[in-house]
Image (cartoon, rainbow over all chains, first blue to last red; front, top):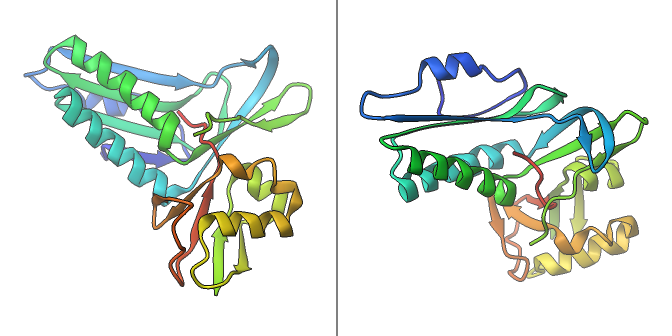
Length: 140
Length: 81
């Protein structure tokens, strides 16, 4: 099981969790980013994720490395789903094992922030009214 | 020199292609590339200022000259996670 992966299939959350955790880690934090049914007041039917795949893989690995160095956590899984991700399904899986909860929680938050800064993945929302829009990322 | 450009997301939809090739003078920078792109595809104009360049899977500063023979990816503001 890879630490970092992009996949077009549903994220294998249970499988990743089965491989997670270590006896020296008292904290195991799991984050799922889930497709939401609304965006700025509009009802969303489904979401679609596109990536510059080779660069996204590399940047996700960098983000994982940064988090492990900055927060001294022991184990990190970082998986992102691409293609269509229907409402209620997960697009992002982050699992962190660390001796204590503080660094685990902070590492998770850090990685999500970094993904939203520098990982070349884009989300398109398909609304129930028939329209579709690429989500405007934060400008640099 | 011919510069091959990889497009994603909204940029790809506006241009209608995944890759395009631009002819640029040697020593042209990312900023020059954006200017030429705007000339050929005026609909890209509002989106290009916030676009970053990438080369060989890393961000590449727009003020630097573009290396010959390398593919450039245009990275709009990201929205994953």
